[in-house]
Image 1 (tube, rainbow, N blue to C red):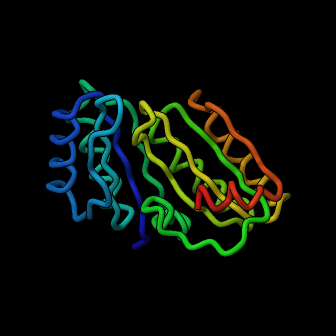
Image 2 (tube, one colour; image 1 turned 60 degrees about the horizontal axis):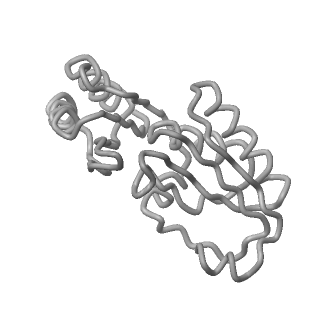
Length: 182
């Protein structure tokens, strides 16, 4: 039994809430987040054993396909994913700052997981479509070369699905910038 995370994204609130209800009735999963995001879409993130998360996401996708946008299931996600979702990561030093932005909600978590597993970096925050018209982003920090490698891998992952918006790596950000965003 391995820990997993899964997510669904729907065009309408009604379909999204119904899909979440199906997910928790299908298998033993915990809801990490379930909410309306801009522009009136609905997302839900669940966690649990890999088989339970897969069954829950599959059930939601197949039973509520009318307004379905996208979904994913990640087995064994990087341990920094959950604190980053809650913006609860404590960062002491920022040698480099990497930012990756997507046009959707689901691809950002997969990309952040890929980034965190590519190099020694710390995820700072995962902003999932809140207040961004459906776009999402994550920020991470580490040594410049590690951040660049992580951002490059995340960018590659997102481009495969056509949802890549933008990215950057800032070496040694000014303390005023660092203090404003952390």
